[in-house]
Image (cartoon, rainbow, N blue to C red; front, side):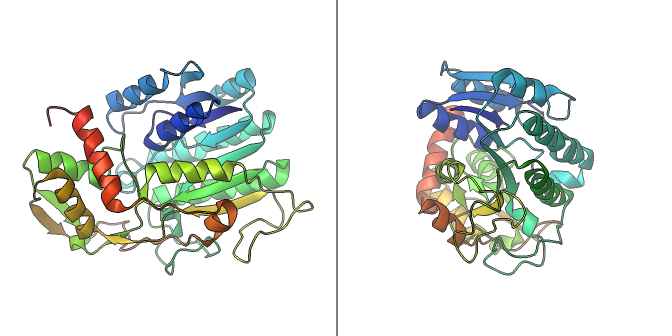
Length: 337
């Protein structure tokens, strides 16, 4: 198949593109290479993908009028994996306009492009942050999500609603999937694992928010990509052509649309993650304990029942194995660290 992957120079987009190329598919990568974090790392990801002759990169921003539509018209992809977004919970307190541009205006452009050039399946990345401040644990896709704590979470929640409306109005088969704390090789420099690794190797103290008691449902990148690829084959049917696969299915009653968690369902305390990182690095961290910053939640915990009913398995890589793989990549990529 021919896949369009937006955000192909990002952490998840790069890993997904590698997987699709390895399976023999053709991939067009679309990325604006924003300077939210190290652009050199993003370019390195694209260079890695460019080793495959079936990969083509387009450098453009989602919010540029007509940019996505031109790529869709030229390539006529079979499936769209929409991963591009302005990410980051805390950064949304500093630069809210970037979230409106990329996550709302940019995504509207993607939806219009898919409307003009229909695809077999539109896959839309969302976030566990969409559950907000009043979710019970584990987070279930059927929970009512109406209290986002940051503009980032609000923009992704709005994206889910926008996608549902297009699925209903224009019969666009759509699956939105909520990530839970993704980590692994080629990861994001703004995430805790990357930050902690850099500081521990430099002999600098690390800031531990939530005083180490916060819990996260860590999801290893390869497990996440495997789930996305498997979900791509689970095309939501039109309301008249199929029903829910289980009691907890989120299949819409009025549109070919479904929302799915992708996480392991095994929350880990932040201090336990740090201990695993210390073991992998062979060094101890100097910790500065701090309270949770605005917008952060004390715990994330994915319900995996729907994911398992759809694809037969859930992320299972242990935190220790995943952190060791990240540390190996980090030391190879930054040999002077």
